[in-house]
Image 1 (cartoon, rainbow, N blue to C red):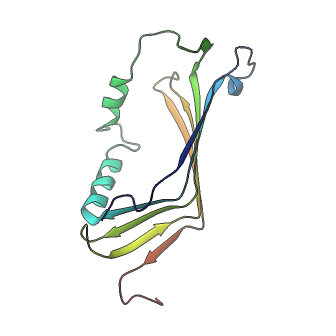
Image 2: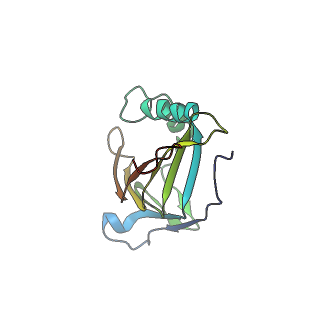
Image 3: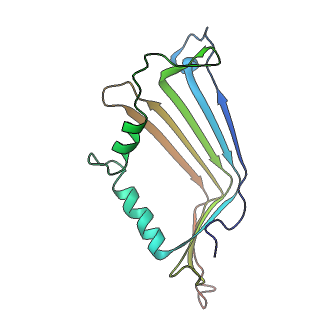
Length: 158
Protein backbone atom coordinates (compact mmCIF):
# COMPACT_ATOMS: atom_id res chain seq x y z
CA UNK A 1 0.00 0.00 0.00
CA UNK A 2 1.21 3.50 -0.82
CA UNK A 3 1.53 6.34 1.67
CA UNK A 4 -0.15 8.74 -0.79
CA UNK A 5 -3.28 7.17 -2.24
CA UNK A 6 -3.57 9.61 -5.17
CA UNK A 7 -1.40 12.33 -6.77
CA UNK A 8 -1.54 15.75 -5.13
CA UNK A 9 -1.65 19.07 -6.98
CA UNK A 10 -0.07 22.07 -5.27
CA UNK A 11 -0.06 25.74 -6.24
CA UNK A 12 2.27 28.15 -4.43
CA UNK A 13 1.99 31.92 -4.81
CA UNK A 14 4.60 34.13 -3.13
CA UNK A 15 3.84 37.84 -2.90
CA UNK A 16 6.86 39.97 -2.07
CA UNK A 17 6.22 43.40 -0.59
CA UNK A 18 6.56 46.60 -2.55
CA UNK A 19 9.47 48.85 -1.63
CA UNK A 20 6.83 51.54 -1.02
CA UNK A 21 4.58 49.51 1.33
CA UNK A 22 3.39 51.59 4.26
CA UNK A 23 1.75 49.23 6.77
CA UNK A 24 3.37 46.28 8.55
CA UNK A 25 0.91 43.91 6.82
CA UNK A 26 1.86 45.31 3.39
CA UNK A 27 5.59 44.95 4.20
CA UNK A 28 5.19 41.25 5.08
CA UNK A 29 5.95 38.46 2.64
CA UNK A 30 2.75 36.50 1.86
CA UNK A 31 2.85 32.84 0.83
CA UNK A 32 -0.40 31.23 -0.36
CA UNK A 33 -0.40 27.45 -0.82
CA UNK A 34 -3.37 25.61 -2.34
CA UNK A 35 -3.39 21.81 -2.17
CA UNK A 36 -5.83 19.45 -3.85
CA UNK A 37 -7.45 16.49 -2.09
CA UNK A 38 -4.84 14.65 -0.03
CA UNK A 39 -5.35 11.05 1.14
CA UNK A 40 -2.62 9.59 3.35
CA UNK A 41 -2.67 5.93 4.41
CA UNK A 42 -0.63 5.01 7.49
CA UNK A 43 -0.07 1.87 9.48
CA UNK A 44 -0.74 2.27 13.21
CA UNK A 45 3.01 2.24 14.01
CA UNK A 46 3.58 5.08 11.52
CA UNK A 47 0.68 7.06 12.99
CA UNK A 48 2.12 6.54 16.50
CA UNK A 49 5.51 7.84 15.27
CA UNK A 50 3.90 10.99 13.84
CA UNK A 51 2.08 11.60 17.14
CA UNK A 52 5.34 11.15 19.14
CA UNK A 53 7.13 13.65 16.88
CA UNK A 54 4.32 16.20 17.18
CA UNK A 55 4.19 15.69 20.95
CA UNK A 56 7.91 16.44 21.17
CA UNK A 57 7.70 19.60 19.06
CA UNK A 58 4.44 21.44 19.69
CA UNK A 59 4.36 23.88 22.62
CA UNK A 60 7.31 22.18 24.23
CA UNK A 61 10.30 24.21 25.40
CA UNK A 62 12.53 21.16 24.97
CA UNK A 63 11.64 20.68 21.29
CA UNK A 64 13.47 17.70 19.81
CA UNK A 65 13.49 18.86 16.17
CA UNK A 66 12.84 22.60 16.28
CA UNK A 67 16.32 23.48 17.59
CA UNK A 68 17.94 21.68 14.64
CA UNK A 69 15.72 23.57 12.18
CA UNK A 70 16.43 26.98 13.74
CA UNK A 71 20.20 26.35 13.85
CA UNK A 72 20.33 25.25 10.19
CA UNK A 73 18.36 28.34 9.04
CA UNK A 74 20.18 30.94 11.14
CA UNK A 75 21.67 33.80 9.19
CA UNK A 76 23.89 36.69 10.15
CA UNK A 77 22.76 38.76 7.16
CA UNK A 78 21.11 41.96 8.31
CA UNK A 79 19.14 42.34 5.10
CA UNK A 80 18.05 39.90 2.40
CA UNK A 81 16.77 40.71 -1.05
CA UNK A 82 14.98 38.80 -3.76
CA UNK A 83 15.33 40.14 -7.31
CA UNK A 84 16.22 43.57 -5.91
CA UNK A 85 13.18 43.72 -3.58
CA UNK A 86 13.81 44.01 0.14
CA UNK A 87 12.08 41.17 1.99
CA UNK A 88 10.70 42.03 5.41
CA UNK A 89 12.10 39.33 7.69
CA UNK A 90 10.10 40.79 10.57
CA UNK A 91 6.85 39.22 9.38
CA UNK A 92 5.82 36.38 7.06
CA UNK A 93 2.23 35.30 6.50
CA UNK A 94 1.58 31.72 5.36
CA UNK A 95 -1.87 30.66 4.20
CA UNK A 96 -2.57 26.98 3.37
CA UNK A 97 -5.81 25.69 1.85
CA UNK A 98 -6.35 21.95 1.48
CA UNK A 99 -9.42 20.84 -0.53
CA UNK A 100 -10.14 17.63 1.41
CA UNK A 101 -7.46 16.19 3.69
CA UNK A 102 -8.03 12.52 4.55
CA UNK A 103 -6.05 10.24 6.86
CA UNK A 104 -6.68 6.49 6.93
CA UNK A 105 -5.10 4.24 9.57
CA UNK A 106 -4.70 0.45 9.36
CA UNK A 107 -3.25 -1.93 11.93
CA UNK A 108 -0.40 -2.93 9.59
CA UNK A 109 0.79 -1.55 6.23
CA UNK A 110 -1.14 -3.89 3.91
CA UNK A 111 -4.21 -4.45 6.12
CA UNK A 112 -7.60 -2.93 5.43
CA UNK A 113 -8.31 0.42 7.08
CA UNK A 114 -9.61 0.75 10.64
CA UNK A 115 -10.56 4.43 10.75
CA UNK A 116 -10.64 7.35 8.34
CA UNK A 117 -10.51 11.01 9.39
CA UNK A 118 -11.42 13.66 6.82
CA UNK A 119 -12.52 17.27 6.53
CA UNK A 120 -14.28 18.87 3.58
CA UNK A 121 -11.99 21.92 3.60
CA UNK A 122 -9.06 22.90 5.80
CA UNK A 123 -7.45 26.32 6.10
CA UNK A 124 -4.29 27.08 8.09
CA UNK A 125 -3.06 30.65 8.50
CA UNK A 126 0.23 31.38 10.25
CA UNK A 127 1.62 34.81 11.05
CA UNK A 128 5.33 34.38 11.74
CA UNK A 129 7.14 37.13 13.65
CA UNK A 130 10.71 35.76 14.05
CA UNK A 131 12.35 38.96 15.30
CA UNK A 132 10.22 39.41 18.40
CA UNK A 133 11.97 38.32 21.59
CA UNK A 134 12.09 34.54 21.41
CA UNK A 135 10.17 34.60 18.11
CA UNK A 136 6.42 34.34 17.85
CA UNK A 137 4.01 32.45 15.62
CA UNK A 138 0.26 32.88 15.65
CA UNK A 139 -1.69 30.17 13.83
CA UNK A 140 -5.33 29.52 13.12
CA UNK A 141 -6.67 26.19 11.83
CA UNK A 142 -10.20 25.85 10.48
CA UNK A 143 -11.77 22.58 9.34
CA UNK A 144 -15.24 22.18 7.86
CA UNK A 145 -17.34 19.04 8.28
CA UNK A 146 -14.77 17.00 10.18
CA UNK A 147 -15.68 13.29 10.04
CA UNK A 148 -14.23 10.29 11.84
CA UNK A 149 -15.40 7.09 10.15
CA UNK A 150 -15.19 3.55 11.53
CA UNK A 151 -14.43 1.62 8.33
CA UNK A 152 -13.72 -1.81 9.81
CA UNK A 153 -15.55 -4.68 8.13
CA UNK A 154 -18.80 -5.35 9.99
CA UNK A 155 -19.10 -1.77 11.30
CA UNK A 156 -21.51 -0.60 8.56
CA UNK A 157 -24.49 1.29 9.96
CA UNK A 158 -22.88 1.93 13.36
